[in-house]
Each structure stands twice: as C-alpha cells, then as structure tokens.
Length: 219
Ligand code: DX5
Ligand code: ZN
Image (cartoon, rainbow, N blue to C red):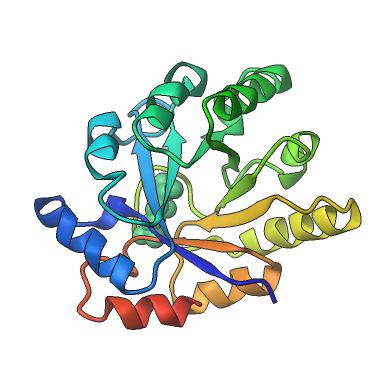
C-alpha cells in the first residue's frame, strides 16, 4: 500500500486567520497544501490568485499543490510557478487540443514545477492516457469543480482504479494520482481502495476543532 498524502484545500480555510489555519494543518500532519484557483469563467466561482499564493507559499514547509480551474492555463502557469507553485495542475477541458495540453505541460516543466492534469467527473479517464509519460500527477475530480462542500461522486472509484491499472500495466512509475472533492473519512476509504496517492480535503478539515485527528483518519 502506497503512503497516503493529505492535501488540505485552503478554499475552505478562514481567510481572516489563514496563517493560523495553515499552521494547524501542517502541525496536524498534512504534507501538501492545496490551492483551488478559480477564474469565474472555467468554473462558476472566483476564489483567489497569485497575490494569495505569493504571500503564503513560503510560510510553511508543505508542498504547494496549485490546482488552476481557469480557462487559460498556458497564459498564467509561469506566474503561479514564480509565486511558489511546486505542482501546477491544470484542466484537460481548458485546452483546445492534445497539442495544447503538451504545450502547457512543457511550459510548467520549463519553469521548474511538476505538471498535473485534472479531469472533471464527466471526462473519461482515458483522455489523460496520451500524456502520462510527460505528467507528474493526475487529479481526478470527484465533484463538479467550483465549490467546496459537495458530495463525493461514487463513480470516481472506477476512474481512479482504471488509471492505477493502466499505470501498472504500462509500467509508468512516476505519476501520482490525486482526488479532489467530497473527501471525508468514509469516501477516503473508497478512493484509497481504488489506488489514490493524495487526498484533497477542504470542508472535512478546516473549521473543526479536531484537525489533527481528521487528517490522521484520512490516512
Ligand atoms: C472544487 C474544489 C473542492 C475543494 C475540496 O472545485 O476543488 O473540491 O478542493 O472541497 P471539499 O473537500 O469541501 O469537497
Ligand atoms: Zn482542487
């Protein structure tokens, strides 16, 4: 069984005391910090951007796991990496062609970050297969992107499982599988059984008194 990493999503943090919330999850055992960037165009919500990332990226020792739910990842990737993104994950559905997907992956690597590709619930997992030799991470959305606090889509199990099998059968070793949306103690079991490496969780972690216990329960 691979080591499960937890990536709290700051979308659910209290921005009135963000530093305190980040400290709590880091002390609670989170290895990654997930930034859900939304542009109000690719998804029907606006969250935060480069100034927020810049101000907190170096204030902790977790991996800065930036998930851009934006329409033009090619244009903004360099700025997010310069602001402190260690992993930059963009959406397959935001690109007009496979060629463009490869261009964004190459750009992320040129700027020194790891490249992730995310698929919405309605996009077949097979769509990411052509890019796996170039990617460092695949993010399976287990909710429709745009908002925290939604219910986990059970079909996500099959997408994660099929991707895990494909990586194994094709001996592709260095691609992490991450899941994002509706993750709690119960749904984490489902995602882990399917073969996930990293669990993104927002509303299950932030805003509760027992953050450390919650993070441990996910692992
Ligand atoms: C959806 C967001 C959420 C967030 C996690 O666009 O990406 O999935 O990370 O929120 P919870 O854990 O509350 O579903
Ligand atoms: Zn996310």
